Image (cartoon, rainbow, N blue to C red):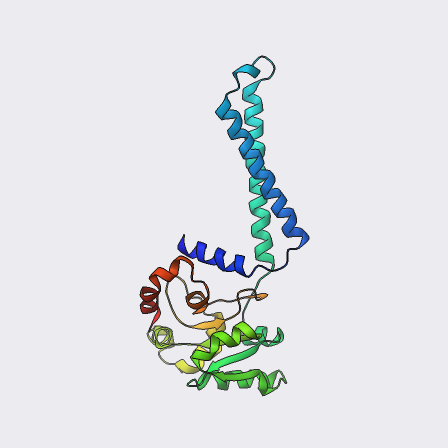
Length: 230
């Protein structure tokens, strides 16, 4: 719940212009609320006075089912609208094609080398690659069309302990697969970081939540910071 409230608060503070679809979904949501309120009002006041004029059970059932269907249509449309605006990142090239500048940490060696190879193969300028300090990253991705890629020892150790990779170069394997590594149910400070309203959907989410979405999480910020540190 805390994460949901944090996200909603951030989105409300940074809401983009509404489209016709957004207005349509908003109207559908309001109509759904009105329908449910009507049913609740009828139930609260009682319908004994109207029993001689209508088949109350049929009317009640029809209104209730219509409201449920209406609300389901609204929820489905809303989720569909959200999903249609984001495309998953599958490779470095997805970011480069979308005109993103790639940020890497000053201490990183293998990842920049891999990005340079991708830039050369795509005939793109090396200026698309920029080295940045951790303290600069948040302002850079907030103020420019940039994507930050970093990794810590946690995910590296995970790769190192994988039996099928013991005979391979972990550094090379990590660089070749980082954009498609799926991280679930673990707090790993690794991966791409993009602005919240990017047309691309990040596979990983690091430090944006920590620094941008204060909300209820602010109360537990120190605990959260300790949990994500490698």
